[in-house]
Amino acid sequence: MKKIFSLVLFLAVFSSVFSQEISKLIITGDSLYDAGKYQEAADVYNLIFKINENSLVGLDKLSNCMVNLDKVDSAKTLLYKAIDINFKYAEAYASLSNIYFLEGEVDTSLTLIKLAQKYNPDTAIYVVFEGINYMYYESLDTALSMFEKALEIEPNNATAFYYISYVYFSADFLDSSLKYVNLAIAENDEDADYYKLRAEIYYSDYRFTDAMFEIDKALDIEPKNEDFVLAKAEIYSSLSQYRDVLRVILPFAKKEYDADFHYYTVIGYYNLGMIDSTMFYIHDAHENDPENDLFYYLEGYVYYLDGQYNNAMLAFNAAIQLKPDEAEYYYFVCNSKIRLNTDSSMLDLNEKFHDLNQDNMDKMNKFSRSKKNKYYYQKLLAKFNYDPTSLSLDEYFMFYYGSALQDDFSGYSNSNPAISQAFEEENYEYCIRIGKSFIEEHPTSIATYFYIANSYFMLGKADLSIKYLTIYYGLLQSIICTGNGETEETAFIVSSVTDEYTVMKFHEYSFAGQSLVSGKKHNYDVLYYMDRSAKRGMYFNIDLFFGKN
Image: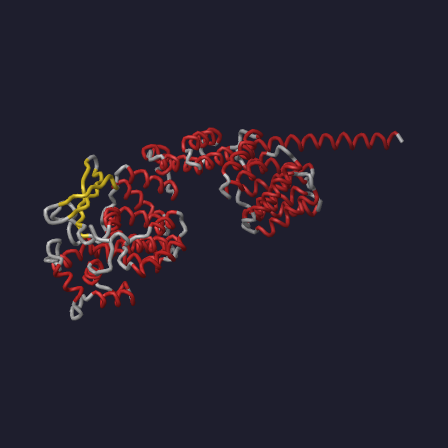
């Protein structure tokens, strides 16, 4: 009996010694793992198997190292071995679930995390991870219920609070989102992602200073986290502090190529007026990342704003080759082409209609009313109704002014505020519907074509957007070729008040006041705008509608 007792006591002591040795190895391995030394940690964890070849903890921890060393198949093999040893080992199912989730195999991930809960129903983090799986499927209600279930198991679980906040943030419930991320931080104030989420909440609420404060907290915890640096650059960009954008971005952008850092470098230099540096980083992006359409778009945009429409079209077309389903690229190609045509066609129109000016509208009236003339208004109206994009530049010109010379035309009813309101409220389909109805009765309402074109653009329907944009520019250039708007003598001739503001928008001026001027022979509206520090006026001849109902 004593021998048996002694043997049992020896085995217990022997097992205790082994257990202590394994614990020491785990502590050492965990320290190396937390320091990001995954291979060294793996070497330590491997020593566990010399003591206990079937150590479940050892298999699980070694699998984590394999994942971080990009040896995912090895990690899976280790975890499945753990399940073979003990099919109720919940941690192995949970770790496998995480691996499959990262690989995009969410169905498998969901099955495995449910097995983890089956064998260990009291672990809140397993329930949280099931909720994360549902977020992938955009089943936010189901995800939210899982996070709330996790809190029933562990009422102060910071991770559950964080993901509840994230769900509310995704649904634009900013107050609720802020409430729960505050709870998460109260439980764990050392997780940088929590501060990042609070920064995003503040940013979405236009509280940029508060957002910056939170990002700085996140960076205090993880100073080399590039996502946080980019978030800081985005906030500075929103505050128009472009020197600060460059200050935080350039140390990363200069180190090695990264599309996100190059993007903010381009934004910073461009808004500081440093075009050479802007183009340097755009071309550097082309060289390092030739398949990235974004930088061809940015190149086109720089050229477009500089009036280099040929170069802009080349860049936008390059972007289309890489991403043919992006409506915005087609939109700018069309804009560039039409503006280029507008500039080059002004001479042709001015040559053809040089004697049709504000002092000689009788000749235009005669053209529009003569059935034998090719510019007879009813003839042009029929052609316009059949295919408005088929009109030539001179036909658009005569159609616009011929419409204004009709007896039933009123320049005060050539716009509908409900159309612009629908567009501003992002009710694009309604904007299109009422816009189309309006132009049936008012075919030269230039602004309406602008709103319809941009509504189609926002709905991703590039072909229809381009169609209405073509009409918009066809009518608009009719006004632009009548003068330059700098004096009474060179005033633009318009048929409605709305067209005055449309011309100003085309020139990208900001409205700064208005006055009515009665000249010796004509009446003018003068719209004022700021040109750098000087206030300037744009003159519009309003004889076609002034004083008429």
